[in-house]
Length: 77
Image (cartoon, rainbow, N blue to C red; front, side, top):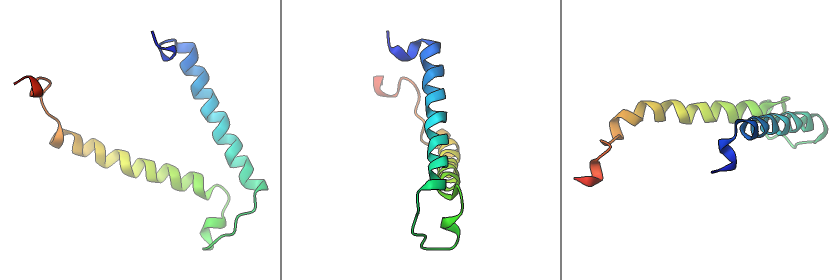
C-alpha cells in the first residue's frame, strides 16, 4: 500500500504544494530579477506564465487523446 493511498497524506501534499507556491510568489517581492523585457518584471509574471503554459499543454492533450487512444486489449491481440 502506497503512502499516497491515505487521504490525509494527499491533503498534506496538496497543502504543501500550495505553501511552496505561495512562498515562491512572495519571494518575487524580495528577489531582484534582471528583466529582459518590460513585462517579465511584473509581480507574479513567471507564476502566471507557468500556469498558462501548463494549461496550453493539457488542453490540446485532452483533444488528442481520442485520436491516439487504443483499445484496452490492443497488445493482447
